Image (tube, rainbow, N blue to C red; front, side, top):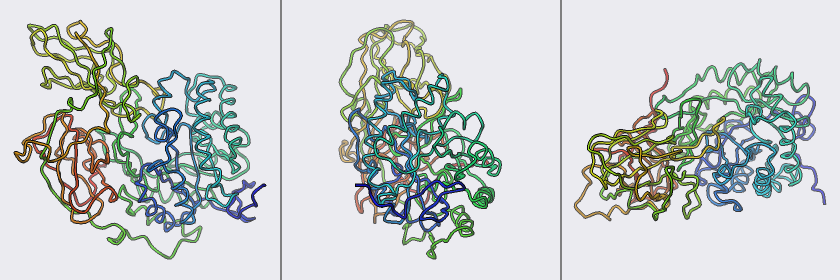
Length: 606
């Protein structure tokens, strides 16, 4: 039985979207459910409605939902159905962008490691790749289909692929068309009936290479709106004009600055689009956080991992509070559409003040004690991280490579083929140096040492490239690993399961606070919190590593900056005793947990 048409359904008219026979202006904001604690979705969605938006947009990260082939997680941060239903309760429409590639400054562009290590040709009509894609999209659409607007649900548009015109597959145009046509067939075959879209940067080459006839072509850009919309119109003479990624900020890399944009310039561009009747999806309404090990990276000659915060200088800051840009956008939107009378103020009622607290680390253990069983390897090249497994099914981010050296009376050279992304080297448990991918390090001088000296290398994946030709590359030490031109004797590799990194603050010797942290080391502290609230963990005095609160992984920190705080969402905080655990990879002489009254995202370019 065919469902009755719903007044929520959008159709593509000759000049714009139409709903229930009337023109409909798409006013949307990007909100990635997987970057926001599920218990805070309602707060962020309410903010979208009070801004005057009628729609929110989200990607769907394949690697988060399916860390192993054949599974599709729908719990916690993966509860796509819960997010769509929460948006529905706020009266918001939803645009779903399942990829399969999402970019999004997200680890591996959303592609699972089990897929990229399989040798398939990514984003092409490779039969094995398409088979895996079909499995994923079918699982996504099982959630989306019953929630489409023509069935009374919130989903009004579904995107096919993502900025495909910017990706060089090496194929001819016919192969690219076959790939896109396959995605469309899978999408329609699964029961998706709402309009389908594509998005590309509005250049002639990208627009031509990234879409198909019959799909609504949209643009992604952050400035020169009038010119960009004109280019879109040249490629699509009829139908809605839509900027489905209106970049109002930018993401940050470690070692750079915190990016900000002009409120006045962003509001002027928004006004320019709305005055032309163009639909807009603000990228982003609220960025949230790259919790855990989910940050991506860029590599255009130099590797640049993305920071943990995805603040993006957005309309809502990382903690969900309205910014000056939020209020300025609301004023512009009110010229073209009704906005609710209620105003979002960011008051203490919505977001209680963050307390300023302090506690000493009281327990610490070397990271090596948490490594998995010895896995011998042969030859001069160790296995890459992609080939290792841990019980959780999550990608391996850290692994120890160990063996003994033949010794050297004078300095000798440790050399590798390529570092992806960092390698910390220890001799008999004493750290002697670190090799960094961003510095293009491939060798490290070792001091004189006796035969049989133990050599340990902690290999770290600092975030997988999410855009460009290095998408899907393997991580770890790539190529030979030699000490003094010889292979390590008795060489083994031991993966670290980050889900097993737990340490009770009372597990130490009972001697009191830890004097210093010499990495790589796991340490913990008990932090007393008077009442549940968001916290801002101060990382300015620490070296480099990862932090957890009550077993929830907040993400990475690094003294390199610009970010100097980690956002702790209130739902993971308890009134009373809270366990703060850090994996400190470098070291600190100030082994204390402190919280700040606000975010500390670092210096700006200006």
